[in-house]
Length: 144
Figure 1 (tube, helix red, strand yellow):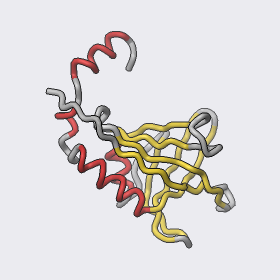
Figure 2 (spheres, rainbow, N blue to C red; figure 1 turned 90 degrees about the vertical axis):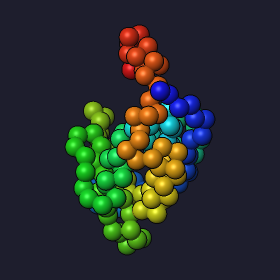
Figure 3 (cartoon, rainbow, N blue to C red; figure 1 turned 45 degrees about the horizontal axis):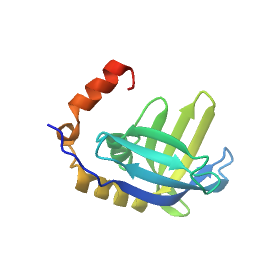
């Protein structure tokens, strides 16, 4: 059974892109959660400050939550707790055929984002928010 929801969580923030020498560059980004895709979160990077050239990465909400406490993830997305001179953070490592990037995110921002996401779809209850008819239609049409 599908539970239609129109609310989403969208938190704008500044992440730090970490260079190999550990110098950092601020990057505008946002964390987004949509109950229509209850297992996933999306990080959108706004390199020029607008939505025109944004780059989006989607991955498991559980991966982000687990990464607050311990290193997690393999392959394209890895997350782990990280203490920096700026305070408690979360490291987000992204890999693609085009290259690798390491970002530092304020731990409090991630915690607030996840609390709000869990208020829309509680942890462990994601399957009750999946619209199986729509998902099956997309699969059969080659859209997923």
